[in-house]
Image (cartoon, rainbow, N blue to C red):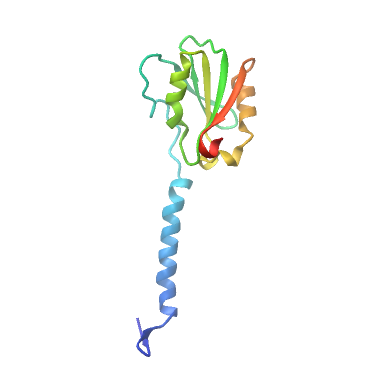
Length: 142
C-alpha cells in the first residue's frame, strides 16, 4: 500500500474492505440458501411407539407422522422455527402418535415459516381431511 504523508490512502482500503464484506455475506447467506433435503428419521429418537413416517406433497414437502395403526383422531400441523429443518421436530410426532395424533410438519421456504404463514390450511385440507386440526409452532413458526 502506498503512503500519503505517512498514512494509507483511503482508496487502497476500499477493495480489502469490500472483499471482507462480500466474504462475510456469502458465509451468512450460504446456510440459508443451500438447504439440506428433508430426511425422514434423521433426528427422531423416541422409545416406545413406532409410528408410520412418510413424506407427502401439499404445496411442498410435508413430514407426516401417523399413529402405528394409521387411525388418527386429530391432526397437528407444526410450523418449524426459523432456520430449523422439519425433521428436528419429528420426535414430537413420534411422541404424539401413540395418542392418535397425525403430525404434519411442512417444509418452509428457506426454513422460514413467516414466508408461507398460510400453509396450514392447504396442508390440513390435503393431508387431514375429516380430522379436527390443531396448528402450532415454535419460535418464528408460531
